[in-house]
Picture 1: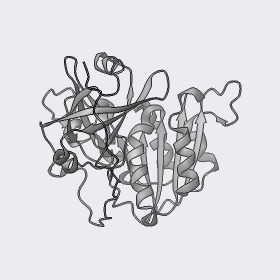
Picture 2: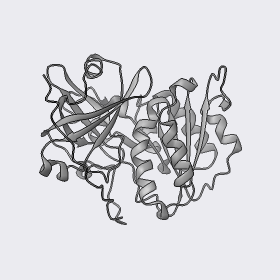
Picture 3: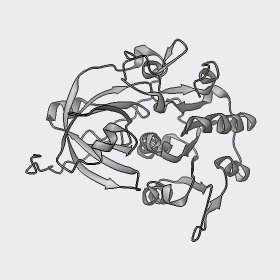
Picture 4: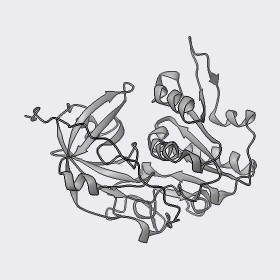
Length: 305
């Protein structure tokens, strides 16, 4: 039985001071690795679609909660007692030390069991793991974020970061595509970001159907109406692996260098520490060296995408 007497006290969230230093996000020495678990509680569950839900977690110990930190693009391991663990991208703001948000798709044994949980359920998290998006290197430049399907989940963390440090970036554009309108996630929040944070948001679906008034086609079709400053634009791409080649090849033709395109191989994550070897691509452990890579590195990893 879950203890439903737990009450979450209201505490204000303080934004982190902006740091202009540039850590090397694609090196193991910069990656936090830990096997320590943090006892946590599910404080809310928000249905998004039939297959996706947004879980909000809170680390129980106040000291551990204050100490836990992550960079946009990193992931954690969520352990559901009795069922196992699953790697999940962190979808919340890195400045929020009170709560963690995880966008979960019902896809396997652990996530199916997680969907049967209710608010107040106890879980454990480990991490954070992996490399991150180089948000500091992108300052004073245009940022183009491209999401396909559930790829919007790992993009929420860099979007939160940009919103909290908006004065350090030039134009910010989000391109978001799904197969059908019903699969679009976080649409109210996308509208809020566009209205209040000066972020240009463009959505597209492959099949519109009755009632859809937006654009229809492939996500690369959105490039046709864009003017890109190739000298001062960085790109982040998240989505299914087949999308990477199509999108990044289009960005390459538009003149964006491959070392300024970043993709996340979060779908290859397994144990988070490179122990099970299921994340290996050639001699590279994507759990340890990734999940974030620049596209030049991806092109040199055979069968990475």
